[in-house]
Image (tube, rainbow, N blue to C red; front, side):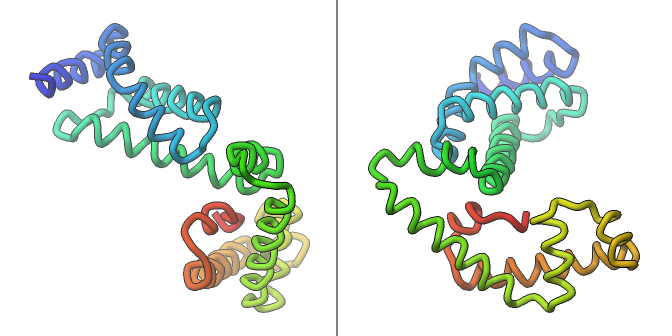
Length: 193
């Protein structure tokens, strides 16, 4: 009965029915919030992610597939948006503090500094696996935040060469991180994503 009701709500949503959208929102918002919160450990950011998920659902309602489980679809979107947020948080010191440390009330400042040092050491070891040219291109992209076009112009190489070198570099770094760290560290350091 619930599945039939959900299918009808999804059909109505596809047709642009705002009431159906609201009912689906009410059905799933708490579960999605808990799911996202378990990963980001921040109430504000988890709420923001859920809002973003439902905005995506509303904007893409016409392309929803009635044959696919709506529940599975919406959880997949939530997982992807949460992981994307964690990658962004790993690259921003302010977000890193909020997401990874403020939630750990038991963590002492010395523990936090030690963890940051460990992460920096792992990152540096991974980067040592790159050739000098790959490292230069990687640093220009990630550290100096230059576009591929800017890097190509500055080094006198093609944009495709920059893309290929970055792709190879990211593969080398991912392999190193997978062999030398756990999944949480990979997400946390995801400077390569």
